[in-house]
Picture 1 (spheres, rainbow, N blue to C red):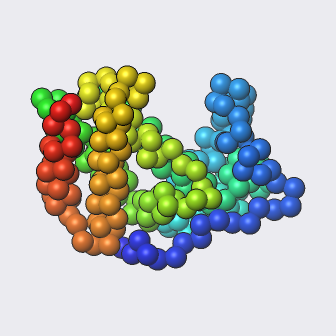
Picture 2: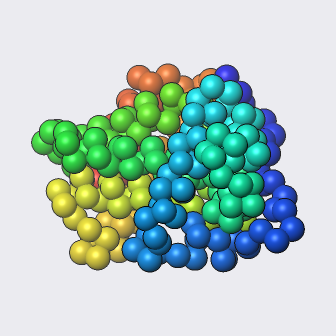
Length: 219
């Protein structure tokens, strides 16, 4: 297993003429404004990247290879994802989508807010750790200022929803939002420790149970 301190290719130079981050479809256009073909094209690209990563890790997600597998021009790929890290974030975003779908189909049944939160975080842990190198790249993206990722916010919103039994960001107090974000941050740290070979699933669950019980005791 790779160390989280291993160097990965965080950004690939954008070819001349490709759109900037501000203007590419994945950042500048809202999902409702995209055409069906744009959404389908983006989905093909993300699926192609995920398939390559599942076989060879992040190193296998070469932009040209992804474009060929998705059946799009290289310039088109760069307009959607100007760098490899943007593509990594999109792939893991798909994982969060799957997690949210799983929760809708099978909501956490624990009677306490902390129990429901730990259920969700352990599902997310198992999902991400199926591809350790991809998880490593995602966690690295969280501390890279040049890449904006909704990962942390989405996890905090998800924790609010399951811990507060439908609580939304709009209805949550500032303290509740802070506590949910803090729990998500602890979870990210535990994932990093697992990637370094310093945690097992059982240890992560135990530590999350302790922290969650204290952070969410007033939910």
